[in-house]
Image (cartoon, rainbow, N blue to C red; front, top):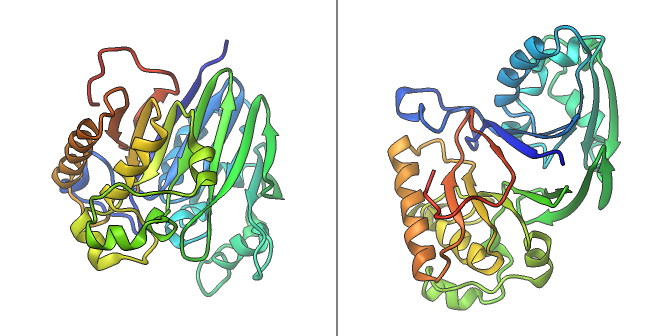
Length: 305
């Protein structure tokens, strides 16, 4: 049986943040690579996709690269690496690009926008790879992987993804603000750390997951200043995890102001709060660039990564 694996190429939110204080978790914006046998699925094209492309140039030096690129949405931190994705310029590459149709056009037209002369010197037409552009559907298959999509609360909209193959279930829920859809808003306004009540369809989309990668950009204090900006508070993530209880939970989309120490402190806070909520069997870690892992039930006893 073929294992499903995931590699994090970019875990930062909003804007790339180079610097010594961001070395552990990384400063590149969102890009993840999931593999299952010969099937390669890439999520988003933040600045992390440039580094992934460099690695692919080595791996696929003697054979064509073939993959699917799935966009959650097209805010700048999720597309800014696309013009720098070297394999897209290689005539041997075969890349199917999935994204939502919007009033401004389909996924091809939208990606072309940031490569117009006013913003970038090279147009999309210079990409000589075999690029095919497809609209996102609710359910479809890529190779041996079943893909299911669901909407996430984020300004302008965002797509969540659930992948299933060989008994492994991977869920990506970046760029979401769960407090925008909770059903007990007044209670949470009075006590931000109180348990939330989430819509049943959102819980169902993520239940049974082996690994959930979820937006955890803000501490509760930060969220008070940034409510409505489209990203989760730590309390909201903890409350949601306590409901869906995945085997593994990865905190991602780290705030550009969050140093390595800050992210680690948030991680430890999340672990402690989940213990208080009676969640003892979920392995929780903060996503970091370069980490590659199997999407599989972890061995017991659990240790934070």
